[in-house]
Length: 134
Image (cartoon, rainbow, N blue to C red; front, side, top):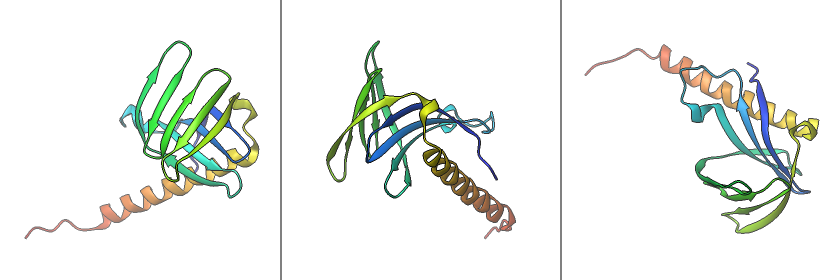
């Protein structure tokens, strides 16, 4: 099961990158929030973590996002990510989505395929379990 996505934002440094993606093959009946994901990628290990979106604020020049894993603030050129645990600050460069390295795109695709597979397996299990009343 391959999950199609497109990059909306790409913020990068030597240690990590943060990418907002839009899922292209999500059912139209799903909530709008389920079409978008923010991902935190450790560039050393290629570990991908989904950042659960809590809130946002934006002006003409500054974007802010609040997540379960931390806080992100960025403009057209640069950004800063402050992680919650451990409390660390990372300076980021805002880059064009067309410059996402293939290794990062592959890590995202593998993460999405794994996540979709887990959800699909759970749905199959749920559908195969007979409904019982007591």
